[in-house]
Amino acid sequence: MAIFRSFLCIFCTLMLSVASGQPIDTDHITYSNALASLPGLKSFLAIPNDAHYPDDIEMNVQWCNQKFTQYGFITKRLETETVPLILAESTQKLEGVPTVLFYFHIDGQPVDPSFWFQDDPYEAVLKQEVEGEGWVPIEWSRLGDQHLDPDWRIFARSSSDDKSPFMMFLTALETLRNNRKMIAYNLKVILDFEEEIGSPRLAKAVLDYKEDLASDMLIIYDGPKHSSNKPTISFGARGITTMTIKVFGPTYSLHSGHYGNYAPNPAFRLARLLSSMKDENGRVVIPGYYDGIHLDEKARAILAAVPDNEKELMVKLGIGEVDQVGSNYQEALQYPSLNIRGIASAWVGEESRTIVPATAVAEIDLRLVVESDGERLKELVRNHIASQGYHILNRKPTSRERVSYQKICQVSSRGVTKAFRTEFESPIGNWVFGSLRKSFGEEPIRLRTMGGTLPTSPFINTLNVPAVVIPLVNSDNNQHSPNENLRLGNYFDGTKAIYDLLSTSIQGM
Image 1 (cartoon, rainbow, N blue to C red):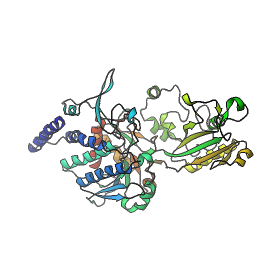
Image 2: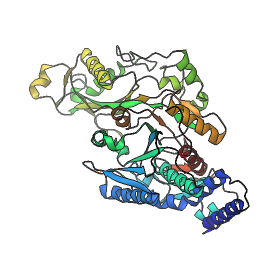
Image 3: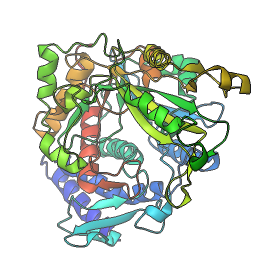
């Protein structure tokens, strides 16, 4: 009850200001509404949201639909083969102004409670950091304290990725209502409930509902802010595609005493194959892999303006050197990467055995940039594998094939999520930059591209709209990991950022 008593005092103070003719402190309204919305965020987080469980997702769908209705939006379920997307549209129709599409995802990563420092990852816990003790739980009633600490954290799955940005949006709508303001443009909102499993139905849904989704620009609310926690805008995101390489040895695992030095070991062969793809400096040596990428002086200046502290970053990551792809962290993100994301052969640890394994498998991912084509890069990798003497199959080899070829492997791949990039000096770029600068009184950090991949390229490519990403949560939020958390100060600032963007008109379109 303390939080509500505190909010009531703030609310009464604001109403007295209105009655006396004094100007309303808009920031005060924004932050007080954000504070008052935290119980709602807590209840929202309590709804399990693993996309592998459609019944749980349906509860989230209904919760979100009810909230949209509460704020006067018209909603539509965009049905797919599994769970729907929700499209909500503001009822206000303004002539001669753009239509903006906001994107949020509501699903979260799976949870393993055994790795969380709380009983239930979906039951939000408020914590403060205590020297020598780490993050210690505190009572929710502490939110009514006169001197609330913005560094307190809410620990729960999806507290940062990505339920809290949606709750910030709802709170910003409440603030507009309290302040008797209108949204400055035509607004649509799309909610994705399968983002954490790659949004496999999104591309078709965007195509099927293209007219419903028609808009002039796209704002994506996802991801963490720059490590400095300053206002951040990302003007692009890398794409991704993945491949599986399986090298075959003997038909079954062999006794290493009897057959070591005789039967070729597929683990060694796979290790040599993978190492042949990069040099000692971490650069891909496959011919043509970096074709089309040129960073001119303007691009280098943009990248150099990002205030990264690379020495601190290396300490944080626990690494003594970095790959020489680009001359700094931001430049490294402008090139396609080739990464081993998993490798396996036989058994290890207590299950290890003295055998020559039958197979060795590597999972690799290729992060893409705008200049690189995912299908082309996969073909370059396949050609490189063939150049190393491998007969490549898309299935398990037959007995005849095993003895017919000296080296044999199976290569499979999955689809491509494209990269995107929007120019800084564009109507959407200038609008978002100007709004955030006005909100916080400082120049926002502009990222040419973010390292992660967003499954939103169907909007950009099918709807042919420019997009930017506005990350709002703290960078140290343990995204996708156990003990995911949200910094309270980020929640308050994020609510203000969305409120100001909703109420700021768009120029130049």
